[in-house]
Image (cartoon, rainbow, N blue to C red; front, side):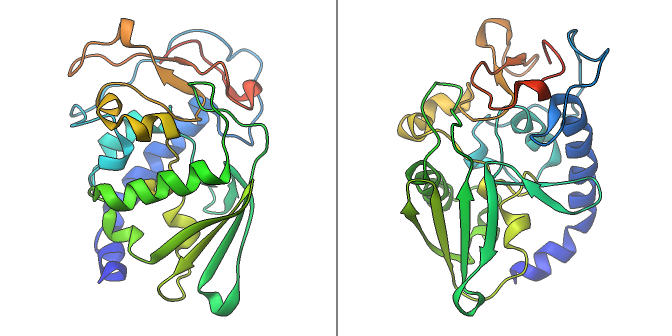
Length: 233
């Protein structure tokens, strides 16, 4: 049923892919470098709708909602413009035993925008919270039977069955792998109006009017500062 849903929502996915590509080019994906002449300034983006929540665990099947999370939250795996998979919060990944295990190695030295460190335990907590919250993308997480930390920076997903789409599920296009800080998970109500991710930007509540204008500024803890091209979105 889930695979049928993936095919049935191809148009939505392609729209999201195009939008995500624009945002990655502007905000800076993890494997990009700053381009001379692009640093500084403000980028203004218009959306057709306001987000029902800024909490990525609650995102529905809506490309516009993903727009509000892409700047503030880093996925485990990036989808490049050519469709290939690139490192995000995870630097390496592979299928294991009977293709029903999926192992990831996390990037070291990463911090969330609240200053707390990225750990395997944090990833486990975020994915479990996604599964428990039951947002609009929950159908994509059902292939994940369980998730465990196998080391300080290594994570294993135990799958219900072999599935070639796991890297996509953990990318920015389906926010199962959009990792939220443990502090944000601990106080989920705050995620309705603030951000707490490991992405290049974070929401500035002092310059934000809910339902009208959302302002994002650089995350001081982002692991690749060379990828932050603009001072404000």
